Image (cartoon, rainbow, N blue to C red; front, side):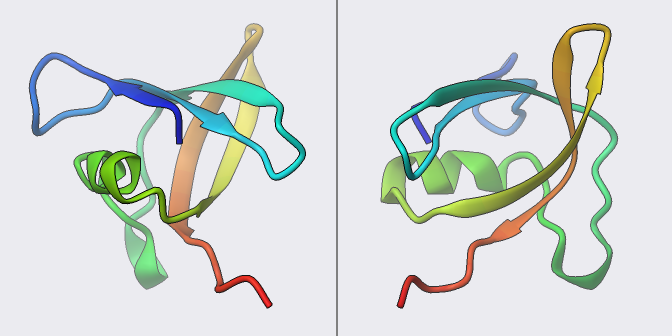
Amino acid sequence: MISATGPDATDVTDFTLRTNDGQSIAFKVGVLDLAGGGLNAPHLREHLVSGVPITVYYTAENGENVVSRYIDAPPQQ
């Protein structure tokens, strides 16, 4: 993760990821699905600091990538 922004330290409204192939992709945080291991928006800031990868589930809406769920990425083999 490259950046995470929001109104305060406990909220994230958007973030930018760097993919494994070096691309930067911007995302808006939508209504998050927290079931089955889905994580809340403040947890994104922990990933920003730690650099631990995440897997993002999103849809393209009106030209923006809107996240509905993200989880800790499985360990790289």
